[in-house]
Each structure stands twice: as structure tokens, then as C-alpha cells.
View (cartoon, rainbow, N blue to C red):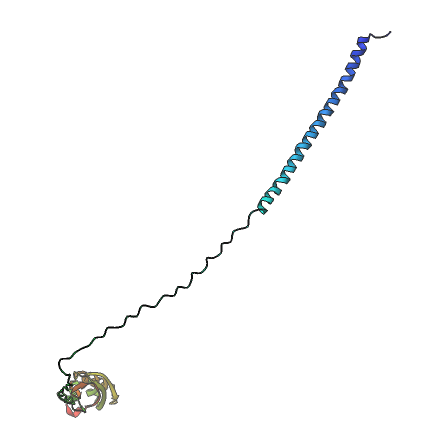
Length: 212
């Protein structure tokens, strides 16, 4: 039994719709790909063209202008000052000039009076080199005697300093007693050219029991 014609037409139309839809999709995809390729190609061309244009502009920059130094000024020679001759001046003298000789009396200054030369020795004030009053008691008990030679310095005021034993008596007590005693001595100082001076001096100090 044959089917009706309208049923066959609808069935073929239903079968043809998926094929048509697939064809439409393929056509649309092809158009999209072509459009994307065009857009991408144009972008690459623009990117490649931009640096070349920039480089061309940079390379085409005009060269810098070199300023030449100004020419040196011309040598200006300063003219010499004008010469003015001095005026002629005539001096008239009323009286002739005579050479005057002035004499001046010169009085010779007498030379200074020299002070007497030489050195006067110092002189002891009081009993010279007397130390019997300082005889040590222990030396008296032991019967010790002797002479001590002292070395010292007489100052400008007559005092005695720097006392030391130059020669010992052989007894320490007598030596020490002589040193202590000489510290109270006083002298008239030595004089040179009228001025007191310091001098080194020596003196003997005897210690005798018979002198008690």
C-alpha cells in the first residue's frame, strides 16, 4: 500500500534539515576563520609597520647644528700718549750762593772707670770654725778626738750651704757634729769687681778634749 504524497514530502524534509543545519554551521565556521585570519594578519602588519615607521623617523632626524666659535677680536693697538714738552722755567737768584762750612766741636767722652779686678776671699764672722760647744757627749765619754775637714759653699749673703765631709776624723759622731755646727756659720762673702759672688770653701774643725 502506497503512502500519501504529503507524508513522503514531510519525511524527506525532516531528513534534509540536519544536513542543512550542518552545512550552515560549516559555512559560518569558515566565515569566522576567514575573518579571524584577516584580523590577525592586519594586526601583525600594523605591528611590523609601526617599528619600521618609528625607526625611519628616528633615522631621518636632522643632524645637530655645530656652532662655530666667534672670530677673535681684531688686535687693537693703544696709541701712545701725546708728548707734552715741559715748559722752560728760568730761576733768578738775588744773591750768589756761597758754600758755608759749619764746624762742630766734639767733646770726647772719657772711658768708664773700670772696677778693681781680682777676688777678695771670704772672711768668717765671729770665732772662726769653732765647734767645741758642739762636742758630742758620747765622744767625750769615750775619749774620742779628731779633726774634720768640711767642704761647703759660701753664698753672696754670707750663708753656708752644701756642707759635706771632705776628710773624716775617724769618728762618725765627731763628723756629724761638725756638719751640724757649720750650718750656723756666717761669712763676709767673697767679692769680685765690687760684687759679692758664690765661692766653694773648705774649713777644718778640730775636736780636742784638752780644750774643755
